[in-house]
Image (cartoon, helix red, strand yellow):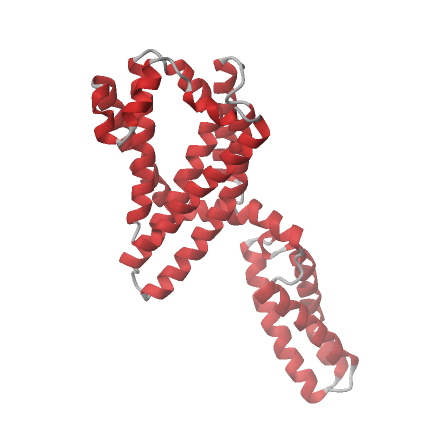
Length: 318
């Protein structure tokens, strides 16, 4: 085999592979579907060319060149080794997290309903007869009496300072989200319990506040951070439910394989929820208990909620 003929026939595709590898330096998510197909095809062809060069032209510089090219291709295709930590984080938030949500949105919707339906039932029940609050949530009668007395007990979390309260809120909210997610390994039963119990409690408090003309005070505290916080709880709950569903209905896969696939998607969602809960905690610690007008707090809720859902539904599409 003549080296000049060998190189001339293959040079164009080697150069094309180099261009694609340069573009894939920050992660494969930066390539289109067609470019990904080209990358895979050209990588396989370069590997075959390397085998020929090692057999027929072992001392020629083309063998060293192809060895380097194939090594770069292998790193991009199998390990994405060209991407640094910052690039991986950018790729996660630019594509991985929102795409994982869109792949599993029915589970998020189910989690939302498992929270809202008990909340509505508890709201109507408590509004019509506040004495039934204790039957819905043990100890809730104390909360109802505080609302009846006009006591904004939810402000107590801020008595030791806004920064400390914000940190406590972040820890609590992240804990709720992770419990809802981890409950998936119980076939989703514990996830349903976490969602339902939190929904019932909110419904009891909201029903009592509405009954005793205290709703503005309650929503004046909840509104600003609620859009993000409740959305994240639904996301984490949906991640947990899909784990349970993978165990119950693995489809054509084995249960172990189905659980692995579901766990990878769920983990992406939960990791994406953590910074969102930090944002919700900051809002809850600094804006929610403030003396800002109720309209301003609702505006914060509307803007933050809209930004979150535009991001989840629109970012990272091909």
